[in-house]
Length: 156
Image 1 (cartoon, helix red, strand yellow):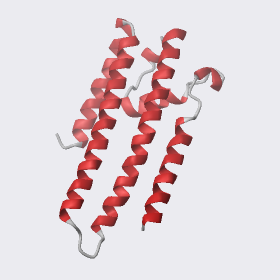
Image 2 (cartoon, one colour):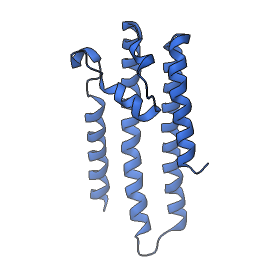
Image 3 (cartoon, one colour):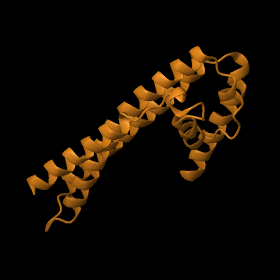
Image 4 (tube, helix red, strand yellow):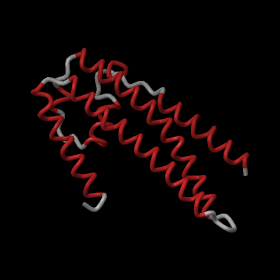
């Protein structure tokens, strides 16, 4: 069983590292919208390109670096989350499941998800900080839609 856990951790880390090294700069993509633009539309609910289309080169460069740092940190957390979920599954299917161990593992999973949320929302605040007041209007509308959408998913 220990071999399975080791293999799962190694696989998760390798997957996380491979995703975190993907190029993100728009110049690398021949001027087409870069991968992080799709990331923003998917994760933050921006349905208009207004704020992205008005970024200066300096803002775009800062945003790309911020996105890279976010993706690197999230990839490691996601790898850890996958491992904890596999461990939880193994605890649950044990001959005599240990309720306390299951509860502790759930706590570990919740802690990782909390950290991921803090990083994502911290990133959104950091992004907002590099925008002009005019750009913030469009960005803020997307954020409000995203947060409202998250609340609907949680049954609020």
